[in-house]
Image (cartoon, rainbow, N blue to C red; front, side):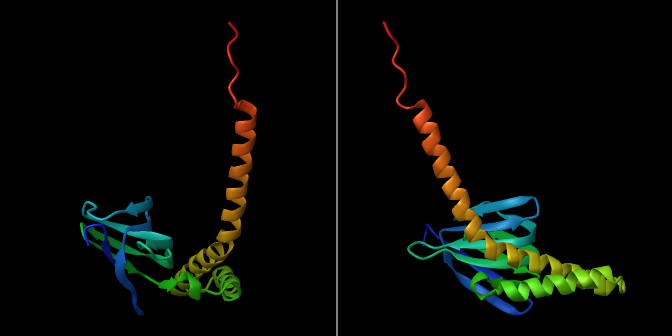
Length: 164
């Protein structure tokens, strides 16, 4: 229990996740936060993005939040999300359609409430689309890093010996 922190992720729709984790990553308003057990207390706002929960011996769980608030206590992390969903439950095709609808609603210049709702839907849709495209980008990024490392090592390794 000493090496874990309890995590609760809730939204207006209900509780999305509750469990123990060894590490949590959240999209803070000023940048991504990494939270280990016994973290210093903190209150902050969240921007739209992914929350990653790493548990010992389990696969990393990914959730998408559309903004909200975060409370950190030494043994408890509470994510109060405006909207939240499990990443595995998101559908890229539906997100693309929602993005299109939201862009049209913003362009039609309805009342302020409709525009605000459309902008929020647009942010959620962009996050969903980015989440679905991220695995391919990570694969490419990893491949590029590996190729760079090989080129770097072949250029400078083994080191030239000083003649004497």
